[in-house]
Length: 415
Image (tube, rainbow, N blue to C red; front, side, top):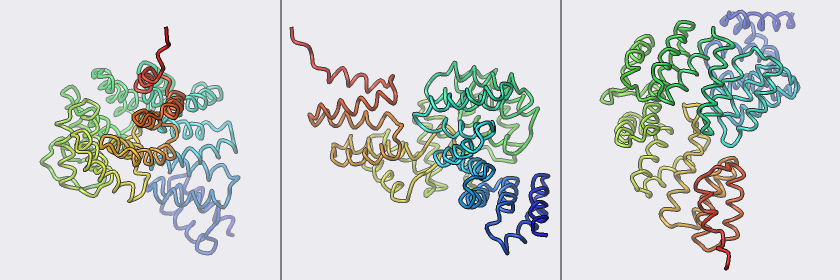
């Protein structure tokens, strides 16, 4: 009888009958709290309700108790990725791939998680190429490739990968959405609008609409896309988040307004960044992402004492602090502010200690060994500086600051 109930719970969850699936699974779990099938059914129920925290909890229990079950690790990876817990998502997806190397859905989760982690572009492309060999007609696998290309500054390749995803699978709204976001990044507004309209034509789901609104806000809502922004926010019944006089405390709206601030950062409009962050601090002064943005503003203004205080407070509260945007990592950003502030204040011993912590937490970020090299050079510890530079250039051979410092530290040959 219990076996029938387990199968029924999974079937109901797969059919989208979430309340019925939950009732059946809950009855079994009351007597057998670690039952695999019912934990997986509950993970699917939570996924259907967009409760990713509960989904991660159910899938995590299933994976911990069943290390050789593909579905448990795959669903855990999906949930962690939606929470922007990229390193954990990658670990779960890697386990799923190890259990079944030819499951393209797991390869896609793995590539997407890796694409959001610094220094992992070669790994992303290795996964993408493997998936493309298995399923050459699958468009979705090219989205993490596009994201990874963006993160390493290869914009033309990012556009080409996103266009390939749409070409292979033109009926999926998220593919059009991603291509539109890439076009926005390179200010090809007409093409971005066309892709966003195509996304809306294929999918009106609230999740896609919210992602579209986030992209438009991250672009700072230029005049060319204002009518589309109004259409999307009205469909979601959201207020105009570009009106900074309007108080915002709802978590989703705070996330979206943070995207608006980041858009101004990308556009190097510091006055607009400061105004937007000021509005966020007025409404949600204790929100971690808002405090990260405030630390950036203080750092830009040269108020390194305030920037350092904010960064230290965020670290004391516990990382990772995750960004609402898939291309950003607020944990690395906090370490950036902390180490740079120590450096600018001339507190070199503390800066070196902070850099050790940053490199341990983010071993793929070239900025941190490069900054360590700068400080060691100031302290006349040239050999250690060169070793740190070698690590920075190993991570990013095109790192401008590292290459300039190499030239500075290279002895001039005697004539």
